[in-house]
Image (cartoon, rainbow, N blue to C red; front, side):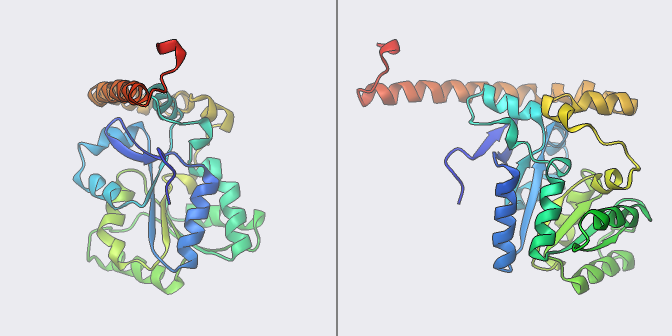
Length: 274
């Protein structure tokens, strides 16, 4: 059950203002009921791609829960009158400790698919060293993902044999979302998360942004300094969201006017407005 104003429309996308603990409560309920669920996440890059990629749009329509993976997006939500807080930012690096502790405590079987060959194994070993009771299996993401290919079917069969409670897909956006859309009906009844380069960070292949920088909303700057190739993404993509941003501002103004009219009709107008 969603709380009032938990699901919001921002910059052309639909997302949920939830904390990581609420995400895992949702996942635990689905696992206990043996029901599949899809947990997605939105950031400025995904909102940019949304109008340009039909499979990505299909993916977000399928999603049961959509986390907000962006402090600038959280702040924008606050600006246009949504009840967002910094703790509503949900991304793998923010909730990894809570997730793996929960998985170990509940005995969840976790399957990870993504990363280069060998990277996932290194990451899995490091995770097991911190949480020895975790039941984890992995497969690299560099295989032929063409629907019906022998490699793709082999990976799907391996996932089904392991019968995970949680499936983590980290192939980068929008490749991971497209793979899920094409194969979702073949997957077991598990909770599927998209986690991007999570295991690259776990294995030490990629330098993670310090959590304090993420909470301050300058993770983009850290990534740009460590990977200048992202310049076009951070300098150009946000401009494409100007139209949806104006639509958000207009919606916020309408909500404000409607709220004032409703208070006036109910004779509960605050003194400051009388």
